[in-house]
Length: 258
Length: 203
Image (cartoon, each protein chain N blue to C red):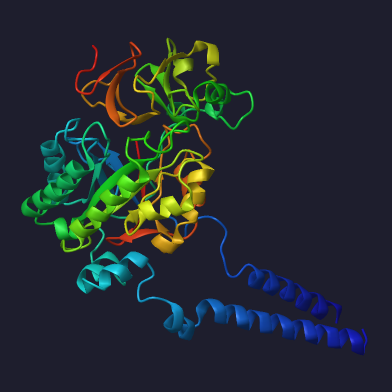
């Protein structure tokens, strides 16, 4: 009898705790990503052992790299074929928001005109967006305010709305500790495929608080050699984020910046 | 072993089953899903579906209509020797990283470039970010797990007073980094610890 009572009490305790937790799981994406993008400069060969590649386009317009080199590299990877994303790091000295809008349109047009595999292998354009430093959250970082980035992202939404396949825009946002509250972050991420840079607990908390816009889906961007912070491995970064990984082409993705 | 204990056992067992049933109902009920869940689990796809249903279906496919190109495998990892060790962690009291954070702001990047270690920071209130360089002359120094004391670093402030954020290593010159400084894409020569305008790295 004692055993029955103890067992029942244990069941009650477990069930009650599960109920009170509301069915929420602890931090850590589930399932763990099984597809991995790697950032590479234009002109690189395909990196062995990776499922996808991100062409790191930098600022372009008035800065490196040339848009033609980024476009050519993107098309080459897609046609191999490989799952491919094209990355831009919008910076205010390299170009204006209007110029970056034009750049997005031009890249979409070029890739779809020159890569027949694009509808099935090009996931679109990743916008690497950085909030300001601790001394200036408004217009330091890459030089654009959150409002300007929101404008650019809204443009990308409409530019991709009628493109073929799963082509879409990603926001690879990085926020220094203390910059951008949750509301600003959610507004900037908006309807993008979120690919947050998870290097600190602050960034992880923003990603975890964005489910109203992401649905709880994030493609975790992590570093291994670059970070001095807590999340200096794929496992640490992925385990700091709730929900599920971004899913496409049969993979659950994360992304390594190098 | 008496009647009271038995009743308590049955009560606890019944209560636990009730809790389990309610919990399962909350999280797995198809009726609930139909009543208050959107057609897609990602908000973007519901928004897109309003104007372009086909696009929404491609963005949020139910299943895997496009076959994976390769087999799944763990992401390749870096050698610990190529990574900045705990000495660079600003959350460790007294570490080089903590001292750097106090002096130059939140560390943003730490990496090995050629025969040197580089740390960039985002600045503090009223102070610009900076790039720190630690030149090595032996194999032990090039092991990222070896501690690199603060006194051995040379720091250069960002010329435009923004945070210093590494964008990448210039594939043409392995000693040159692309660094953003307040919206300006700069070159940074690690060997000479100098900034220059993008596209014109100092040699």
